[in-house]
Length: 63
Figure 1: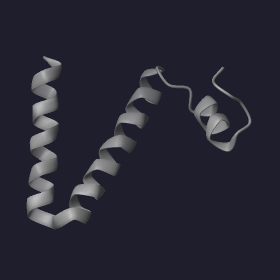
Figure 2: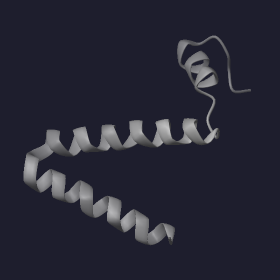
Figure 3: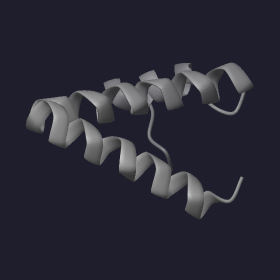
């Protein structure tokens, strides 16, 4: 699937959530989509959650 088409679909979904459920519906949908993307990347092995947690807590730097 073309990434432009995917981006249009995601934008349309977020616009629908904003119109149907207001600002907080939009924010909630965006947060759940981001969490789902992170979980999907972790399941594919493309994201190391331990490294992310260490970076967020300040134990490691990215440099």
